[in-house]
Image (cartoon, rainbow over all chains, first blue to last red; front, side, top):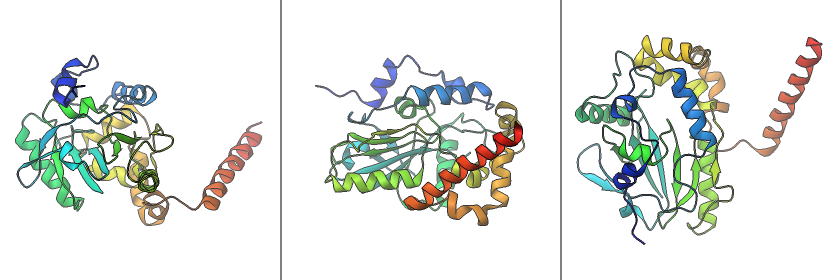
Length: 82
Length: 187
């Protein structure tokens, strides 16, 4: 079975936020409610599923492909400056 | 073990941490993040539309533990270091493969936020504080107070490893007792 990469999966997501909504100007109650909804409905990649592959630029130059890390367990964390 | 961070959108924008309009700005912030938080492992930068972030659930602070084959072994929806620590230990006991029993943690752990959430919020002052207090009252002032009492609270809130079981049971019993006393006083 062919595995969709993150960008292909992104195109199939119905919950996709528009760029201007994704990079919101103000944190509002609706964002908190969305966080609660996402938490309750377990939005994201489920245990046992193959983590969708992606390649992203990294600080210091170059890029890193997630699938290149296979062979050892990986802790993958998402976060922001604020 | 590999460790990787992915830089996503601003969680609490403000004058000093504007919503991203260019990728260069996001990369610059990722450099600042790695330096200020002294992150010793790779920091990746998602694109402006959050293509990877949105596939991985769009939450503000999640951690995935992937097994050696690249499958999700554990999904900690609101990063809590002691929970991730425990999951790593179980995964390693399993030889680095398979799903960790439980598989997913939905709890909105806010213990670390109480003492360290302010570090993020203060980068966007004053707007970040006004916005969050308007959206969810107490979620701005709480971390401010928590940061003031950081030396006192940190041993509990910023632990990387789980509290010993007797201590956890004691704290849970204390919380139940305090709630019961409070309810009885109200009657």
